[in-house]
Length: 276
Image (cartoon, rainbow, N blue to C red):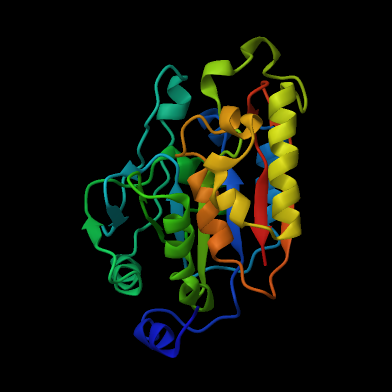
């Protein structure tokens, strides 16, 4: 819950705002950074509905660490954390500023959890490949919060709840991953087939979407206990856990909206969530 102390602690950093939305973005292939497709169009359509943020805090599937870290540099580098793609993708730079002030306040808000101020990471493709479609001018400061791989879904959900005060300071909080994400089973021959998923992927998407729209988050927090379809959809947790950060920030007055809600290449989903 947001407390007066939380709001006071960041009152000198950013102006008070109306409550900001919270997002989970299915980021998919890094090529979405430079390709034109329906999902990129979905991100741009979303951007038109968002109030201008003071800053962005992104929880990306691609910063999976022991312990919790937050980027605190003035100018985060653009990380090309992938291989085998065209040079044009490696040439992309997203020169958004960082926010050492927001990093420090995030560290304070999450106390007593130990959060390390990190000067080395930057913006990985889970962050910049989607944020560049929301804010192509890179004119909004961006920090990243890492995902502690030693912790449970319940831990991550509750950690997110502690960030609630930032929503009232113009901070747009984004989780970036993919709910259905089984790279070993990708059907590359049908990569361009619209809304194509294996039977288990269709079942997993339906299961998760029903829980999301019902506001029944506990089964999603305890995802390791769900059916076999979910186990195939989430063979490793890093792309799923950013969703729990988004859900942890929903309050009783918020509504949930799904977009880009399609399956891809058999074993991936691009389903994205807006909470406002």
